[in-house]
View 1 (cartoon, rainbow, N blue to C red):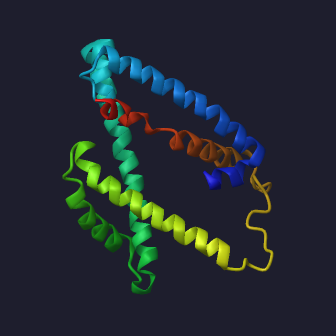
View 2 (cartoon, rainbow, N blue to C red; view 1 turned 180 degrees about the horizontal axis):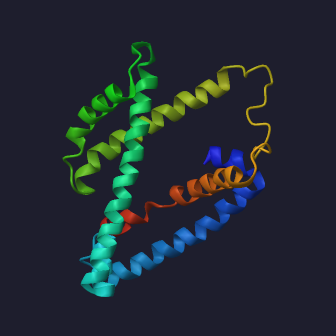
Length: 190
């Protein structure tokens, strides 16, 4: 979201943040109602099967798992880049970093349910907490970069037409992505 705020500007970013929250709440509320009526539903495909029949369920299963496949590909790229950045002195190429990332993911990908992820969730929380502590200590103790402005403009004025549209669409999609946790709501409720 910080990058989206930088591209769209603080005012429009705050407006989007405020607009996305009630939409997220509404979809969560609706999923809760579906869960209460069809408590065996643990995925969107299960819910669509109950609500729209076998064809609707099949379409939703296919859509959801295609979305997750693309999303995991994106996460895999981020993990590969993170490995490259963490071990920058080794000069890892992306394919090598990808193979290492795949080897690191194999053990954790054997967990099939949210209940199985409890231990990893605790580890993830502790890791995020440590990073936040490091971040705040750094902010409070390290002097800034000679008064340079990090982002001096919002949307790049040199971009015109379709390129500018793509920058705005990319920034808007970051807000949608930030609020897209509903895909696991049904399993969490189950």
